[in-house]
Length: 484
Image (cartoon, rainbow, N blue to C red):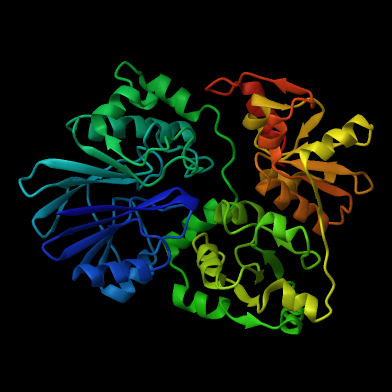
């Protein structure tokens, strides 16, 4: 028996490869198929099943392409209606893999079709559960993503989740391993651990949602408290996973195409393509194509694209580091952005050599911020961090202006005024600066190093706020002010 977790940090996502007697199953694969196909070839195994724990919202799964290329059967649990061929397993049904057995446990709550796959070893002993977004390490799946107006509420889904955990998962032996679909950093839960697996027994002791004395009403209240709106691309990704999508091979062939400066410029003008610059933020600031947007490939790339580019069909052309174009196109496709039309051959140097215009963003060190503050030159500071980060500690005169909602709220800013922008380390603030610059805000100054550098400086006044583990309603109301 071989059980391997394949963890992707930028999405905080865990896929799984399980093999026995030359037969394999892959659980919740990412969009790109090559790594899985290479794995199967290296192991000399045949893919029998592709298990999907639910209709994922935060990424586009590779189940359709992988099934087409291998002949493997896609397996969902009950209530999973799709536009492609699959096996809809029933609660309690068992599927064999070599000498192993998988038992289907229908565990609705995160979504109606959410399913946990219980792995029984060669002796029939429960060995591990692959819980998807039903049970995380330290948390459970948020119950608001699949609610439907007038029929199913987040409270209904939370009640289902309580029943699923108490009736299907918690009665299992304490030594069963828990393998979830996500870890810390995913927007599919509220308080996930950095650990990516654990024993069920330890989760019963440490996970707030598995307290033995917890009533159904308490569970519903705690699980639904403090839920901020999900990223806008979630619903669109879930629909792609349900209906199917264009082959990743076609997406890569169309997107990883080198473009000369004149060709890139013509595409931008003809189809209103977005120029997405994925280099490092401190490289981007020194020279970029006017009106381009920075989202660095080495940060939390795909989730930020999903949060800030509202249309999955948006035509995109890329500026990226040499040799990384295919990686960028792949990571865009992971969250459903399939309309990449090429990348700038030769990078920004080729653009400059062609005599094309370049723009810049001023970025200053904290020491210079101190100097300007002492001279009375700094009037507006925008803190691009999340509300909880801001409340924990912030500059005394800073305004919280979360990057997540910059598109909704930039109307509150004045294009004639000067704004200093910071985040935690410099990544998010440069994204915000690039978006504001592209929308006509010419007086934007980035604070390099962000809060980490600010916190280390003793000359700037700060305000502290002890943020409780569960956000009070007034804090949620304040956060909702940004979503319009």
